[in-house]
Length: 224
Image 1 (cartoon, rainbow, N blue to C red):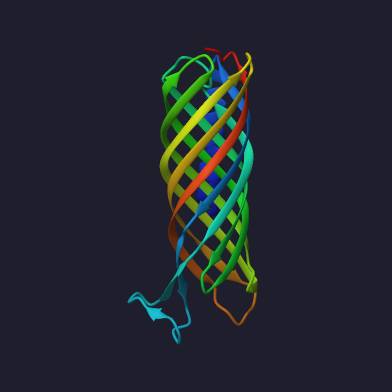
Image 2 (tube, rainbow, N blue to C red; image 1 turned 135 degrees about the horizontal axis):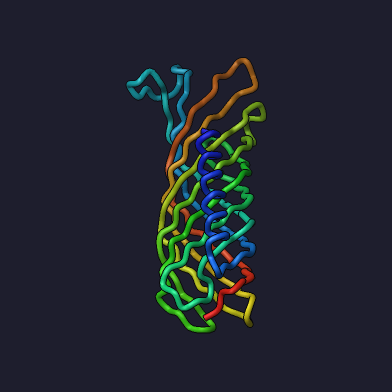
């Protein structure tokens, strides 16, 4: 799972390098993001004395979660202010989230996330660009559970969904932007127990998240 995430991360850096070296106009800056999701967890147990047997030599139980997420980091956009239909936006940053999993405990997690937006400018003026399109999102996080101090959690997440954004151009070099998205995600991972009296637990699940994002972007050669 870690190797998969870092392979995706490396490919993103390579793609970003080619975009920045090939493009005559570019925008780079910083973002801040807030999201709220409702995950559905499935946790697999080795202890068959209490949980439900799923027919595959394992015992599982389903849980509902309530997740709040915060993130900040770096943003790159190929078309911020220009009168051009397509833009590609790349974000990578540090994120934290807390998920109150009903009947299990609160997961406190932190890690790295990245997203790829493929936008189409439906409104393009010298002052404002309104765009929309699909987003791909990947994240890796680790942390712990408040009710289980001896456990370490590792999670990988991937998702897709629609996003809409607006760029507000201030002068010749600065843009302020807002973005909102609704992402459908799947995740998987492991709960590793430091105590010798407990087994490790595998988990997976899915979620839907509504998030809001604010950016400040500095434009280089990018004007209407």
